[in-house]
Amino acid sequence: MQIRPYYLVSYRHATSLQFLRSGEAYFQTMIRIIDAAKKEIHLQIYIIEDDRTGQEVALALKRAANRGVSINIVLDSFGCLNLSNSFVDDLASQGIRVRFFSSLFNFFKLKLGRRLHQKVLVVDDRYVLIGGLNIAARYRGDAENPPWLDFGVLAEGEIALEASKLCSNILNKKFAKQRRLRRLHSFSLNLLKASPLVRLRQHDYVRRRNSISQSYKYSMRHAEKTLTLVASYFLPGNLVLRRLRKASERGVKITIVLSEMTDAPFLKRATNYLYRWLLRNNVTIYEYKPAMVHGKIAIADDEWVTIGSFNFNHLSEYGSIELNVDVLDSAWAMGVRKILDEIIRNDCNEVTNDKYIQRRTFMGRIFDATAYYSMHFVFWFIMYMSKRERWFK
Image 1 (cartoon, rainbow, N blue to C red):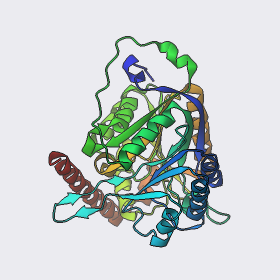
Image 2 (image 1 turned 180 degrees about the vertical axis):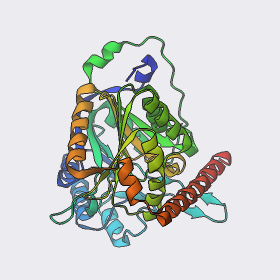
Image 3 (image 1 turned 30 degrees about the vertical axis):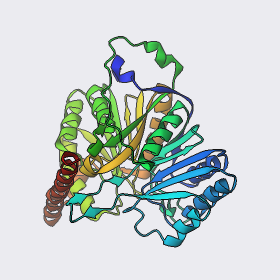
Image 4 (image 1 turned 180 degrees about the horizontal axis):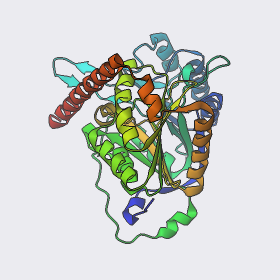
């Protein structure tokens, strides 16, 4: 990928960087860094469930609180709608500060509350765990049920302090507007020699933060050879589709891994409607078979990777607070790419044009089209409500 000097602004060196996949090892890593905490923990997440996984993480947090660690948790009020009061009260009884973020809808103010969709754990301003995984058994899996496919990054270094500040701002309801990046006309490319380089990217349309979207669009515009995406709830807007088409026309090999299974059948129908467009524009589509795809990854030219909570749809674009981590390092990116290639080879089916035509029935095409245009109306409404909230701030 062509690296512009100004593109390196805000990247920082990572002392260590570990790629994580959903399953037992992910949650053991989470518990391990919680158990290592000495001063402060921030946990901000969309969903935590009162199941075995949630209880084990809660137990680790309570152990930390008993050691005198200051713990601040922010949960999304809609994502944790079914979380029991006893679960929350048990945490609070140990001195753990628990807050809920934003009601879903205020009828009297005609306000659609944005969602706290980011998933981040910060320990002692030293370690930060960022990804797409909620704290629930379905992301962990068991002997009978493979985990939902998702990914995260554990980083050590300055990025953890930056993540801590972002979490503190949300906890204390201090939202600063995003500053415009200075475009540096001269920047030492020697910085690349001391890789890996990482940076946080937060997206919050209401507060005029759109850096994740900028990262994705930059990668699509400047990719030269390959662009690999893992996408859940895939329903991008026209601008993203145009960028994908132009990348394909430049000769970029584009691969998208989507889910065969779904917990949102109507949205899956809408995604199916896009298959014809994707295949017509030489995009290779794979469907993951063992479980639901919940991960969000992009890899450009085996040089740049982004991983986090941001979905290709208007709900992430306009209605949620999202957090990704960008990594600029060819060796690390190639390592992630090899893992994805293995997943594709062992656990995915390719959707070719012939297979797509064979499985489409007349009624299926009608249902897909209905779902596609209906979901676009829903997302248009979300966008309108988000813009209205921005206008009336």
